[in-house]
Length: 262
Ligand code: PGA
Image (cartoon, rainbow, N blue to C red):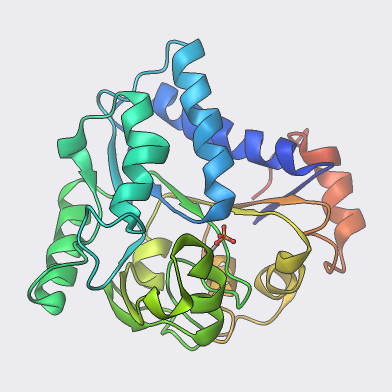
């Protein structure tokens, strides 16, 4: 696992955007795994800047989002379909037919989850999966005690997750109780996992994910099993790590290491 600690949130955000842009530059038909949430908003701004200012083209890119609220139609203002259209898809020239999110208003949720898994497999698999982390250590909507080998399925959201996401709805009561989410096993199949965490509210889950025991109580700790996981942190999100001096010595201020061990 590569742990990169940046002096400042904006540096960590820029690094996440750079990894996405570099992936597309390297492989113009890359399959991206995308995330939503407050942390990703600034990343997508930077990716859109990069597409405008450089020769990187998203015309051949496909994407699969981590999750969607069960019951929300794509046009709902708080759906992740809407978030992605507004924050990224409409700004980077991606072919909308190549963008995928679970359908929140599907009739048969189990069939939709199976369809989603099959579509990911048919694409050849995800090259780079962007991840945020919840205050409770979730990745996607894999809440604590999710199976570490789970696949796309319906999960019940915790009270903490519903509260954290209430900012995107008019009222807490409007936040759905269920979501369709890639499983932890689905996420671990990506060829590169990139987790971005910003701010003091993420310090505890980040420490558990990186240095804690592998445990279903912290779903992000499953990344310890991945052979190519990159953790991008600002100083506040890194504040509870015990080996911070070590990470800083390997990658001073998030800089590439001289020798790149994984
Ligand atoms: P946030 O969400 O970026 O809004 O903090 C992250 C997550 O819950 O995965």
